[in-house]
Length: 358
Ligand code: AOF
Ligand code: ZN
Image (cartoon, rainbow, N blue to C red; front, side, top):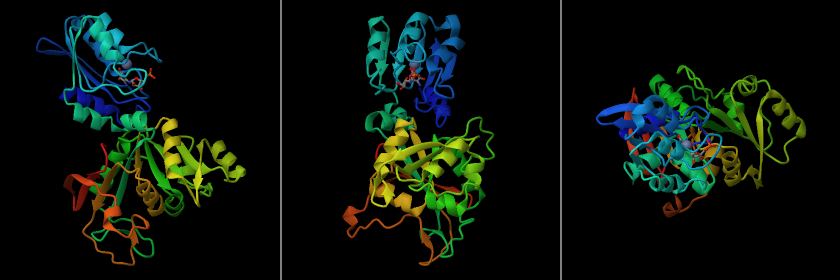
């Protein structure tokens, strides 16, 4: 199952809206098939592993990180494929919460006389597919907020200089983290100030994560990096219903996907932004700022994971904070996260914190 989990993780960031599943087929003491969900979400993991195993699947044990599907979707049900192949035993890490499956895959296998075991490495399987479960159970994507800051929590000097606070190894790791998410997200201020491309560079990726920009007015540079790359790498713009129709059309003509979202005061409603992104199919989002968007997401309790890269640099009170005002007066009101891991990356410190089940 540990091998199936690591195979499954290969799909993280490139199988949305589907979960990233891994499957290993064992005949006696020999691994005869290995599979994982393919880019775009199909084929599923099991038919990949079954194709490799061929006739050796008969009487074999199958380790799969998610309950095999029971529905006729764009592919036939994986549970049926396992039954047809004549496997003897299926070990499943966790049940599929998708309403079309939800225990029916397990029942199909059992009804066919196959021995089924559920729950092996369940916590790891839930964590690896936290984005998928978040979308199916809560109707929103899993959200990671990443900040690169100084020892005193600043992300730039008072004049806005921010390149670079952390060293090259941390920045390389950030690109690897982007690649394991369905989309990289920033607010309009960051898109205007930094003119980022938000692409993953230097990893030879076949499929880039989508880029999401949250901008109520859509007043983003039409000549910048995002506009230039809109036709090559998916660009999703969350905007308000009151955005200038000429800008909506200009961005659509450039190849961007436009998602109208509800407003709340002067900003877009972060809950609705997440709902619309989930409806578009996104399951794992990596938010890289800026401070206003980060604050609105934290305030709405939508942040599942905090990823911090902290440098041994002290900027002082004139420096810019990574997260804007939350309007808190009491510590008891401050959202608390639990430390998941910490590690030295080159000269910097990486620390990861979790809020919910992410
Ligand atoms: C599996 N193995 O590798 C994956 C599964 O739209 P479809 O037909 O591709 O179905 C998508 C659903 O199938 C998805 O919501 C989830 O329930 C399941 N994903 N199932 O047996 C896999 N990726
Ligand atoms: Zn399937």
